[in-house]
Image (cartoon, rainbow, N blue to C red; front, side, top):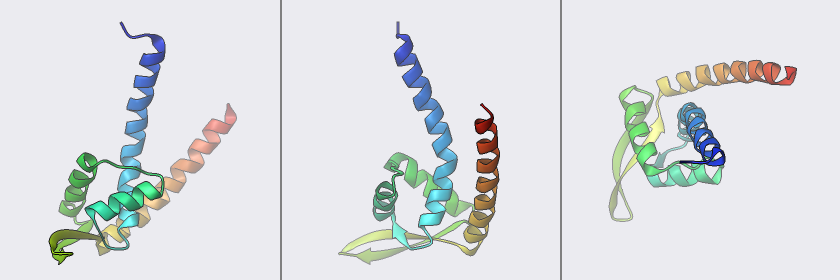
Length: 116
């Protein structure tokens, strides 16, 4: 039977994952204002403090592209075919809207959390 510390750690990990999911969309859209292929995108996000594993990143990229928020193209680089991604015009518009919403949420949370 797990102890209370393990249950707390597991719960924290689960809640942290939920919190990160929404942030990752904004992070990927923001980072793809400059073109990247998957590996360099992962490195850039990690360097900026937001590590993401391949099993999360590539499905997210496919979903964002299917939603019209990203565009991609295959190109050969260093004798290998690589898929390069960049934000679309609709993705830029959506990122702007999400940033406004993010700011509003942050303001509200700061007010709520400062009351305690």
